[in-house]
Length: 390
Image (cartoon, rainbow, N blue to C red; front, side, top):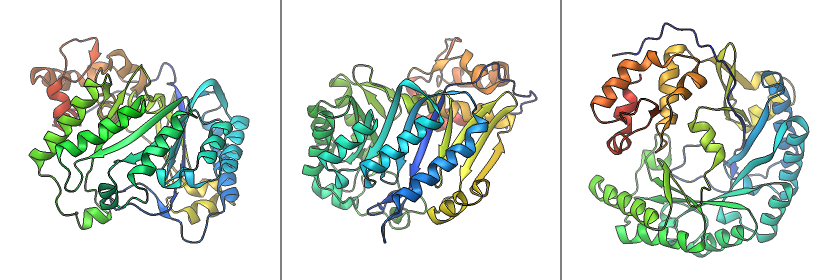
């Protein structure tokens, strides 16, 4: 059954707004990575790219005029390949163009392979409040199998240094790695927990199309049953350590949720600037998606001449909004208030009444009508739950 929506979206108020900044370069492309990232071969003109980002943001201003920005996320690629001076120039430019909230969360991704203590201090001085470190594992052999340029000792040193510099730190871990046992996966989690980090993202290694691993999967990948055992052990270890499993892949202690990603999951708005960046902007006329040219050369050329040539904009059809909303909101363990559906899509909840009834009858959704919250079964079979809203 295909969901049919005969209503025109009408937003009573605009949602919170975030800014995503994409820096697409990395030292070496990881074989599992399907993000828009490009290996550095002949150096990068940091100043030219930062200027392009600020030109891009200026081009976007009429679509978000006067709106405050709650969070900023600098992702990649590996943003930490840029100098602290370049990041400072970028953030100063953002502050000059946008109404950034005084308590804005400013996250930046970093990889241990580009770790320098003084550089981390420079990022913090520039205004970064939260560092997200791509650890993946503390096991050097597993890191080599993943094509990472750092080892376990460097990963640990990067996390420990960041904890002494930034108010908030996230450690990214991967599990179900080639040849990985339950004990090895648990050891990675225990090592991360022992550092005192209060946010951990734990991702199942997947073979994405159009990646090196997608074309040629590594040997000794855990079978499905073994991977499920590893996942359950990872989650159990984090819960026993006092972490809250608040989103499909995210765990936090002491309420240190990632505010930027929470805005995504609650179907908030975000401006996306940089090569290959995506955005979502609401207006009283509806909801618009934006994409930027993927290749850095094309993006830079456009931003130096005709910025609009690098940007595609399209209206999200009313029929697509329920699935888009649920695809984000139902990743949250506690779900969202049912009223948020109308607030963020501009559609009455009645348009998904049949799908909600089916999901509830199959024990995939909580029966409480005031919330949209997946059950444990719904979280386990999330794709089946989401398919009801297509």
